Length: 236
Image 1: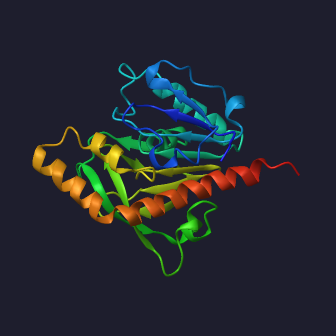
Image 2: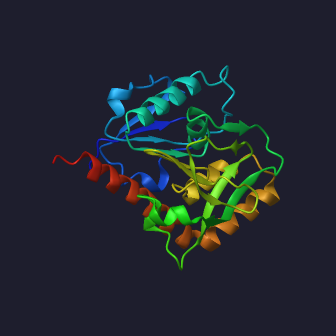
Image 3: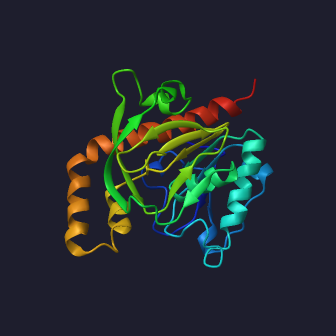
């Protein structure tokens, strides 16, 4: 599917994954590898900001963090479609005036997690593709220690997990997902590489057991975002 979407990749281990086929033709900006952060005008056709292993406050290690956050703030002001995942979602929360907590007290959330959708997700232009009155939970993959501790004042809270409340939220044209809808077996291998051997094998086995459903729902969310961008940018 050709698209005018720009994808910001912040970490070699956090690529487009399950979204790769959907984003054929998209511009991939590898900020971790020195690509410059684009301007707001350059992302009017839609913006995806992927995750990463650094924290939102690690500006010394990742000089692109503040520019990417500012880019998302500008995209929201311009009402450009934004999908922010993992670290991207944390930056989106900051861009809207929220707060991200480093090493949040619940601890590491890594592997398959049960999501609990709130009523607002039923009417969300993207999430409604996987949420209904009879489907108010979903298995997904998460991998993070930091977390959004306070949503922006204008944000709509859309989903939680047992450990972390703010798994999905919307700020105007921007959708933030703390979980990883792009998860694939290859990406899970990368994300769990630093865990001890027993935990790593447990997480990989848990993903393999639920892989079909996790990937199906993740791709449905990603497809819904791409389709929503196509509708929004279609000439009248």
